[in-house]
Length: 479
Image (cartoon, rainbow, N blue to C red; front, top):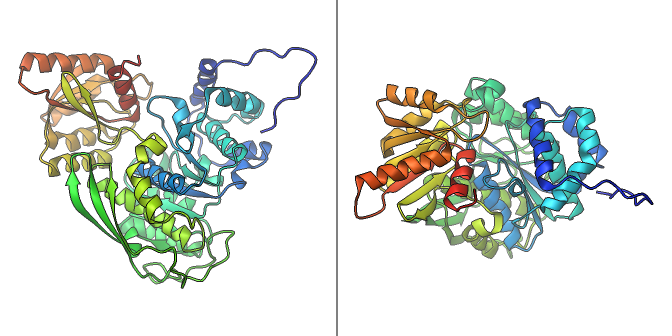
């Protein structure tokens, strides 16, 4: 992005980082606008930065952040300068925009916001639209080799959907954001499938009627739909408390057709086909360490590897071979800052696990992972957004928790503790008011001290990215 011309007169001082965040967050009062008009105006004003780098585009109900981070980590380990755009953040806003794991600097965020501010205000752009344009401009200016872009909400009308990806990813389809995306799986799948572009292959874990909708959209775009299981044999060979060793074996696949036999159209956008008979950089089998617990994370890892392999099958990212895949998985947290995925945080009084599961499907996946390892939690700290199905979330949590302390994160969208307690009691849960996140942590600490015991008990913190962020800040003495 070009900098303002120097003038003889001294320019007014730039607003600081805190003021910039206030400005961006104030854009949230505009709500969520579905449509691409604003983002197209913003990116056109900035010179279409989104066209200056190749990218992968990831949508889905759950698992987008993990899948995107795993893919970005593999590309970083291969030596490619890799941008990663995810949302929401957990501790700091700058976490959303990273290159090789390093967040955008506060100074750079201030500069870009100031330069884009006139067009942001002219268009009435929302918080997410403005942030997305900043990310695109930053990646373009830093000349990334590739970027991994996560949608914010939906797909078809999401602000990120101005990109033209090499490969598209739809993790799965569940009932979330129904007030915006639709009240049925088919309608939500139709919105997510809006990221499919002509000639761009798609990899997905979607099933049933959602997959039917996605296949129909792919046929209209004359492109192929793949499952990771079309491309790979995937097995968990050893489960541990903090992750798993998994076995990946490549399958011989006809990439000209998807699994329904539909003939693909063009190749990966902008790239000529290469002879697939070349096997010099192909791998057949590998055993890798995945430091993320739960079967859902094995699925996310499979999606990330499959997306990379689809790109590599067209002659791209030749350096991203077995070593990059192994190291990318093993170092995903270090390379991307990924946090809040069944993350273990030890305090003197408790053994805490934090997860950003924020809808019924996400919490069911986490609960299943703990139950498989025969882990129960005497206490859980739970808080969620009021637009979520909080009753179903509590029901999903019930099998692995004894006592729930309901809290309300510091965000207007958060559900009140009264509403959570009321729904929990209807389910027969032992659920109690906790107040704020900090107050809820103190309440659980008090319950633990009263109960006594030789070992610090397990405590689960779950329900929202915002909850995880506030809890981490409190537990790590950052507030």
